[in-house]
Image (cartoon, rainbow, N blue to C red; front, side):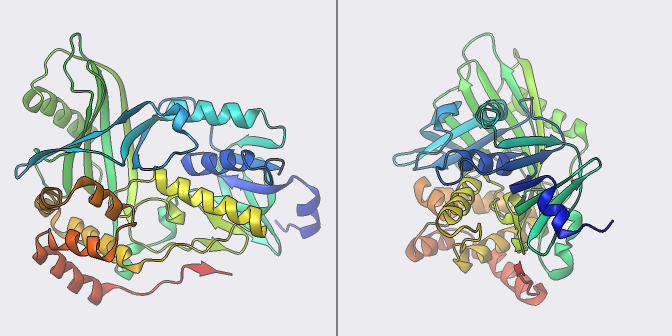
Length: 401
């Protein structure tokens, strides 16, 4: 089908087309309508279907306020770490650890966007994204939407092959139970960020606990590996952990959640003409941890700031290449010998204050702090990773005109 530029301009044309209505796409639209210069721009958000379920939670640490502080479900100032090598509790001073439930996020954003006559939603599967001259477009089975700029938050792993070029692609996959107990059981003041006291097989595996109240907690079994597990394996591991490690027998499962998040050091093309990639494919997920909420918020703020000041969404990304190399080394270890990560993390958490670790993971640490972090972990796995990376890696162009 041939599409003329003139028909693009005259038919269903928007200032901004947002492909994908998940965390990144909705955060971007929400930030735009809260920005005086952008609040009246014509926006279309295209997604498969409306978000109406509590399908996930987003957790993050931060020293700053966010646009979504008013819908934070729970905040903690203590972090617990458990492994076969270390058991330690950390007190947060400058940081807080917080969780936002998916359903609260969706309700807040939909409520705000539905009040804006210039913001529209379209539901259906996107089958094509492209551009012609100065117009970008997204096509569904039933319609085509055109825009001055298109923001693509759809992660499409089939479009690249990281292994062919010496990069890594690992999945963070987890299943969680929201459990209620008839009597107070949990210490609701502390998050269990890592509990490695489980079998480390073909990847990295740990448990993660968000205690919302003394009688209510989200307990997740998490893996970092190339392949997902059979569904019954997640259930068996959760039940074993709750029974044997937590020593809890009287509880009810109120909700379950499952998700799979890509963890990759592949340097995606972050923009292509008038198409801007946001979310995971725009670098919005930390490659070695999968944490995405705050990285996406920072990405959104940079896009919005550039649209305000320069009229384009193309911002200059922060470039501290050492962090990309740190991520690649850890992913390489996970890929080859994931069972070693328990010892690596145990030593890192043993020898460093938690807020230094947070700065390091946020890519905000100083050179001295980077040295202290790297000096605290067993050196041999990282030396082996360096050799692997130097031998196997090929350069990739990150931007296309």
